[in-house]
Image 1: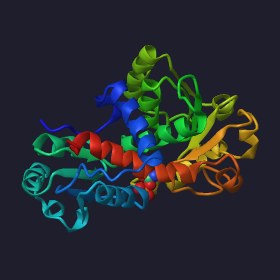
Image 2: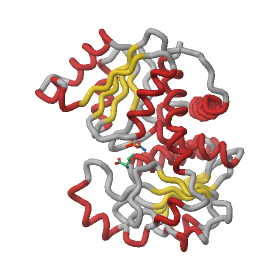
Image 3: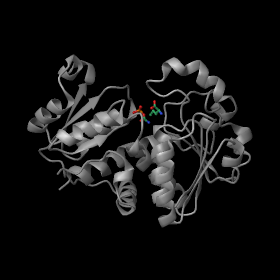
Length: 304
Ligand code: CP
Ligand code: NVA
């Protein structure tokens, strides 16, 4: 069975920790190692992307491999070919498959039929490579992760789920504030809590952004309207009214608190321009770490 990367919850805490450390190492000491020499990787995206797509294409090239970007809309799968057949055929040509799609079940269906590794580049449920990049950024800036208070303010979405799982595995105290009806999935929270019990971290879910942010080492937010939820825009803007990460909320956090966002950001909506562009913001470092983190993931599942 090939090694897939579908959600952090499938990995051991030690594997997640080594991915984060490897991302840091790849940034600090870039080397000429080419573990993907002679290997081709298909990148199949059904949703928009700037960072993840580019970081995979460049990362695969830097590791010696050949990236092939495929727009979902132009494949036969859009005309009714099954996911399983698509995965079987792709496995005969390429050595790895990176997928951005809607339902997590699309990814698992592809992975079950493929004889090559499948990597999650974002689904409605998870964004695991993003979390590796985010924890690498935090580790670089803070020196260690255990006992850090990470406040996530906003939608209990794909990014939130992966931060909960990764944070729990790495011993982080994750405090997540979401309005009623937009909390993270209960099963993900339970799974994260069980990882926390092992790592010494903690998971706290609240409806109060102020409570989450108080004394935090890092404050993280993401868009209120994720890809595929455009029809809910008005409803979401109303529900998330008090959840903007701005200078007033940052005053409640530690003085050296970092401001994080996976990007793309909407200034004046989930985050103020002052917070996003201010001195505490590490969002551009996070974006850079996507390259190092995705390379670490590629090495882990395709490197030998
Ligand atoms: N953060 C992130 O995944 O960005 P893209 O949607 O641009 O890939
Ligand atoms: N939650 C966002 C993340 C984008 C990188 C979305 O799914 O659209």
